[in-house]
Image (cartoon, rainbow, N blue to C red; front, top):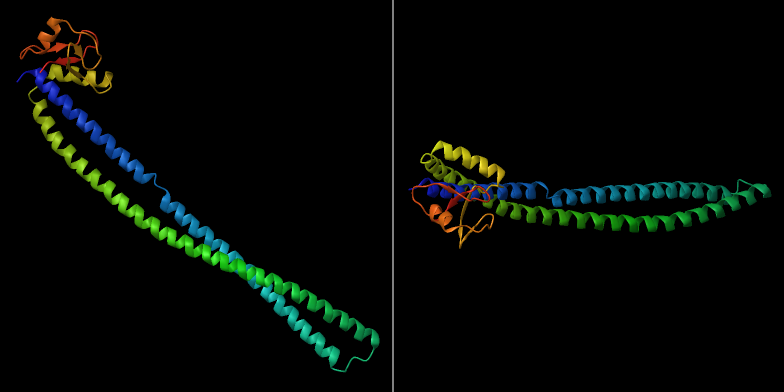
Length: 233
């Protein structure tokens, strides 16, 4: 087989290796940048924080209401116990009892509202937890598919590397050095083929002599326009 043929085969293998490497990197990036589980965990943490805050607010109101009820009980006991005889003191106690009842009524309204906030926060926690479980299952399934593809591509790259090594051993080192340089400077394409009467890489029109040289089993030819190796099949 000619050097041109081997260079062409090497180009095909390197293209597949490049594509495999790019796809593996794409998969790794996709998995690494998937923030759905992290976002769901953040949502759970935020909902738990909201629940704790609502519970603390409710507990504070309940404690305050309990203290006011105790104070009311003491004031009523004093008012109706018969020990206080002075009208002014009795009047003050009556005002205090009435005031405490108003405060307690207000606190009871606040307590009811706070209880509703706790229930809403609990519902938010449950929803966030369910979403987290769903997201974890979904991403695990998806990542398994991506990792399966990545594994197959890795195996394919290993097989292609063996084929590449076998082909490289049959190519003159001078051509290999030029091939590597062209690959670097020509966006990964060092070998072009004939596309009707043109270079498949740059589209330049080729003369009959150029086409004949490209089809030669002995001669290694180049595109006169882009400088790539030219393989005519």
